[in-house]
Amino acid sequence: MTMGRRDRDRVAEVIAEEIRGAGPREVPQRLCDAVLKLLPVSGACMALRGDGIPVPLSASGERAAYVMEMQVTLGDGPCLEAAETGSVVSAPDLMSSRDACRWPVFAQQAAALGVRSVYALPLGDPAVCVGTLDLYRDVPGELAAEEVRTARVVAEIVTDALVALPRAESDDPDDIGCWLSPLATDHDDVYRAIGMVMAQLGVAADEALSLLRGHAFAKSRTVLELSHEVVALRTRFDDLPL
Image 1 (cartoon, rainbow, N blue to C red):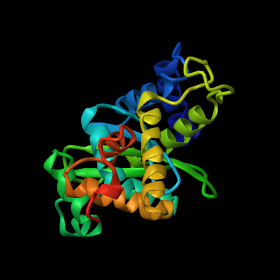
Image 2 (image 1 turned 180 degrees about the horizontal axis):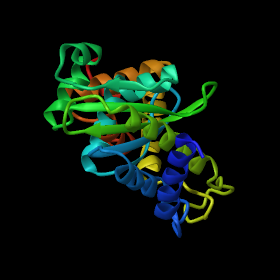
Image 3 (image 1 turned 45 degrees about the vertical axis):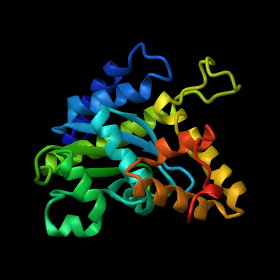
Image 4 (image 1 turned 30 degrees about the vertical axis):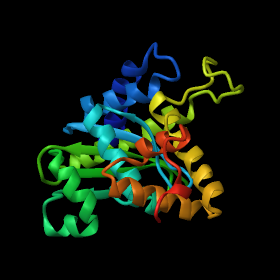
C-alpha cells in the first residue's frame, strides 16, 4: 500500500467516524469538526460557490464564520480566489507585505482577529469547483509538505461527502432531503436583498451586490447583516444617498 493510499484511508476513517449517525443537515458542521482533528489549524470553514458570492456552509466556530463573512462582504480573499482559479491558495503570513498586498483589507481585518495564515482549497475537480475549504491558523508559516498532502485528501473526501448528501425534493425545511445547514440557508436573505435592491434602483444583479457590499463596508457591517435589514424593510436603497 502506498503512502498516499494510507493517508487517504486514515482521513476517510476519521471523517466517517465524525459524521456517523449525523443527519444530512448536521454533516457540513461535522465535516468542519473532522478537519480540526486532521490538520494543525485553529479554524475551518466551508463555502459553496454561489452566483457572484460564496455561500458559507459550515464553520468550526464564530471566528471562522466571521472571517468567511468578511470575504463575502469584501468580495475579496483567499476563498474567492480559490473558487475562481480552482487552485489551492496559500497565504502563510497575512501580516507580510506579500499577502497584505494581495487582499489589503481582508488581510488587515483577519490579522486583527488573530488569524495569521490562511489556506483555501477548492472543492471539486479541475473542471468544476463547487466550493472551497478554508483553513485558518493563529501562527504564520507554511504547512509542511505532508500536511499539504493531507489537506488535499481532506478536500477530496469532503467533496465526496457533500456530493453524497440527498437533495431536497420539497420546500419543507424539515424534509430529510433539505441538507443545507442554517449557516447556508441564512444566506438566502443575501439573494433576496440583491433582488430587492435591483427592484428599488432598477440595476443589474452585479451592481446590486456591489452596492450592498459597499454600503455594508462603509457601515462596518457584513453583507449578511445588511441583507437582513433590507429584507425586513428596515433599510431601503432608494432612500440612501448613493
